[in-house]
Length: 190
Image 1 (tube, rainbow, N blue to C red):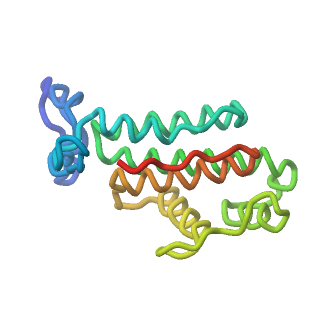
Image 2: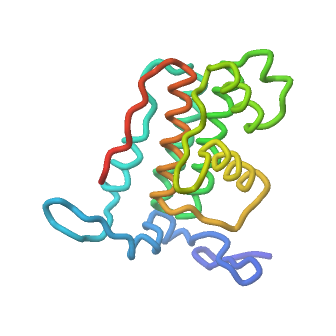
């Protein structure tokens, strides 16, 4: 099948990808996302707001280089979520992959024998490398991260809004910091 330049491509009735002309435009779903600016009050979210939220999620210096590289890949996917909201899922998946890789490095040979994020997190807690999971309104944060990781890895139609993606990143970052004896920066309120 051939397409003319700029022609929309459809996959079973859904838009498969943006046209060339739309590729660098913000995802239309951001038109309804608002922020409560301390100066301007309630206003539409801007790319600067989105970028600053992502920048606030960086890892502090001191994590293993390969973990920093994988986590930076996740941050970049999150930045480009501005252009395609669906990339929030890709970004969250990469943030969770960076956590899992950080666990493999920290746990060494023992981690290679055990499959899955849940077992590695549990093993790190048993060995006092990680503190016990935090309880929140959603329950045990390790269980939640494992659930989200498995959902992404095995395919899901869910799309994560930026605030949920930021929570996933913040928890992954906190655990990576704890694994490497680094102070975890707190997520700023915006």
